[in-house]
Amino acid sequence: FSATWLDQPSRLFATTIPEAADQSAFDTLPMWQDDRQLEAALARIFASAALVGTLSLVDAARSLGISPRSLQRRLASCGTSFEEQTEVWRRNLAQQFLAASGMEIGAIARALGYSDPSHFIRAFRRWHGVTPLAYRRSALARNGN
Image (cartoon, rainbow, N blue to C red; front, side, top):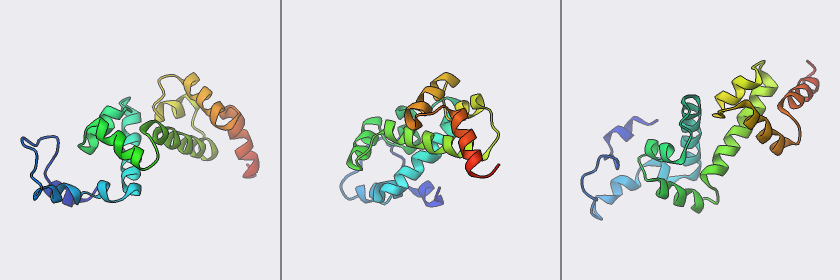
């Protein structure tokens, strides 16, 4: 993250609501300026949160320093939702893990924040129509391995 964020007021610890003149300090935060930066910040949050089992809207909003409802509204204005962003992140990372690594399916499931490998297998089958193992085999065959 940018070190300039450290100089900005924190919404989590604010004791008063900023007046209109002070609002510009909040508007300069990158996540409010660019949708891609917000999505990138969420992807970084997902990666760390999935490993410790705290992949939730509440925890992601807390990490961004905003309320869960504000995060939902911001994502809705981008035409997406927290659940959609989580699923896109999981789907993309699952494809990478399966195609390029020898990680076990259970390890991939845990890295993506699933509490049980069977939940990951069902989700992957919903996304691609095949099991993760079948996807891995076809990816390896395509790559000539």
